[in-house]
Image (cartoon, rainbow, N blue to C red):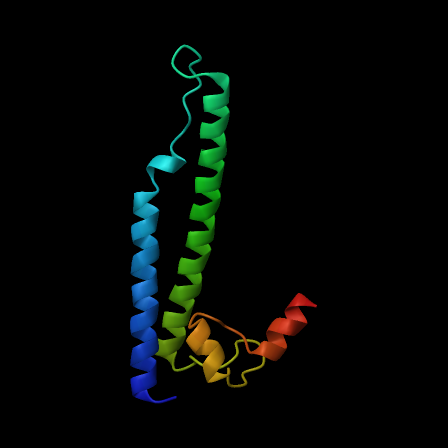
Length: 115
């Protein structure tokens, strides 16, 4: 992989990370504890609020996992291992990296893991 390719992937990964961190900050209100005071909010409204909170917490969990994947890919760029499968050390197809620059495995290893 050329230095130009690595810089392009690094920029994409940093941009994705910044976007995820921005979304995380914006969703802080949705993850806040739900007030259970029946005098202020009806039962159905509380249930909706609890469901909204659960969804926000799950989205936050998934964002954190994606940020970890991005950080790992950035580390692989710095170490010179980017573009190679972490399982078998074979080169990852460029089209696969274009689709998801944080992907750590080649298609063969990903299929083995799923199967």
